Amino acid sequence: MLTSSLACGAGGFQAEKVDETYVVGSRSQYRCRQHETKPVDIQTEHPGKQVKTGGNMSDLSATSRKAVLAVMIISVVLLFGSMTPPLLAYIMYSYPGEPVMLLLQIPAFVGMIVSFLVGPLAMRINLKWLMVVTALSSLVYFCIFAYVGADGPFAMLLFAAGMVGICQGAAMVLTSSILGAYVFDPGRRANFIAISTALLNGGAAVINIIGGVIAAGNGGANWPYAYFLGLLIIPALIVFCIMMPRQPDAVEAGKAGNGGPSGHGGPIPAGFIPLKAFLLIGMSTMVFLGVAVLLLNVGNYIVDELKIGTSAEAGLANALFTILGVIAGFSFPLIVKFTKNLTVPIGYAVCAVGLACLAFANTSIIGIFVGACLCGFGLTAAIPFVLGHLMVITPPRWIPVALSINIGGMNMAMTFNPNIMGGASQLLNGTIESQFLIGTVLVAIGVLCAIVLLVLWKNPAPAAS
Image (cartoon, rainbow, N blue to C red; front, side, top):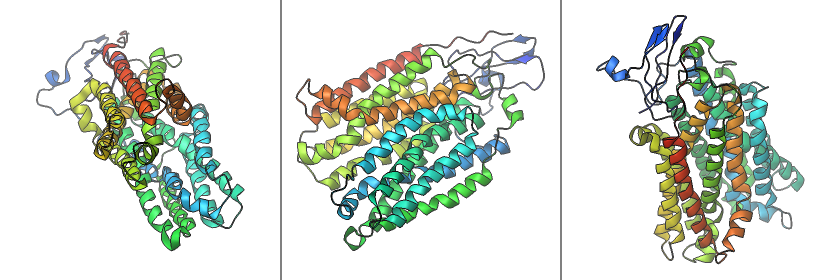
């Protein structure tokens, strides 16, 4: 059940939160009266009335609807830059002797830095223009790869790799921050974040498939032509600039209750980012450190360590992770309806089972495929819930910073995963299998942390004034 708010339209009205858990998945209980507050269950107060939940936009203001649609449109193209890894072999043929692997390492490193910086920048620069710069950085990357191609200086490709790193680091922080600024109900906000994440991953998956087909022409010599697909960013960016409002609707923000953008109906959280937010960020980073073993090592695991398949099977495992993640994103409202406050513990538990399947796959390629599916679904089901909760407990001014630290921590876990997990695996037998075992333990610890932070830890109800 998603959180909903009943706002009062006259001065002197206050709303007091009753169920004490400002999280996606709980039902808010309010009654507004002048000079007093009294809790009441929504269904009891309005018998037979359908309480709106889910990701629909029918009761949002025109300003918020335009902002949400603009974010969804731009989300489709923001991660097009992930097309390079599948084409790396073709690029190596065009640049023999060059450090081609830097085309993957530079975006990861730049993205990690940018993901930490974009939140503080969002406190000073309008989110709309930050998104425009982000999309343009990706467009520059595609234009350089397309026009410089196999004949230009390799240094130009390295510069382009840095540009796409800006987009990769800022994309999720900005989409989530914009949705947080324009959608005030926590449940609906988390649903839109889930859909935006699904569109980010879905767009990347589709462009990888189409780009791979184009690049394979002429024995792989056509790989620069695949980057002309990046020109699709132009119409998406134009639509975004036209549709995206410069500021949220002040009237609707007022109707969201005293919580405003925090959306829980009580007073706006004051001060700095709370301790609970930092603990949630640490939990997310730890879990992603475990799951990243799959994203970085499944190819070597299948081909070299277990010797049960080729690069085709490795590609399919990665594709299944992405596809199940997209499915989880689009079905997030339904998932939360049944799992409620247990969404994150259950999602992490599914990830832990998936990593265990990978660790004990032995000679079963089916076990690896099942593990990839479980990890993709479980992780993507949990992330929007965590981001939504961060937005609720963090003062509005600091929400972009909290999101930036959270997503930056996940990027850092991805960047330094080979060093951390590879070193830890030496305590066992140094194999990728042992990395999956360690990852399983980390995610299992994440399950316990999620239960404590999101189920047992009750936020204090705001005092009535």
